Length: 89
Image (cartoon, rainbow, N blue to C red; front, side, top):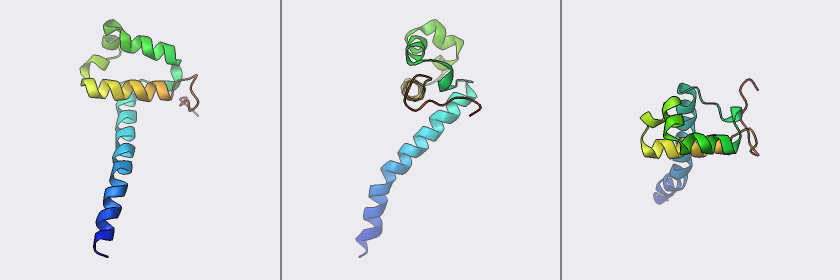
């Protein structure tokens, strides 16, 4: 019976880390004034493929891991995605 709390902890930890990462990326996007629903997927892909555009949005100041997570978040919630996040809604 004592192993049950440990087992539950191990099972739930990845979920809580995933939620925490999503919240962190969402806050990072807001701090940079980047809102996923303002651009279509192809537009976000262009932003992340261009050093000039990344510098314009200050994405270049983030670590490479943060950049990849931010890109995935913005594309996942872009205006033409299945789960858009639109400011003001």
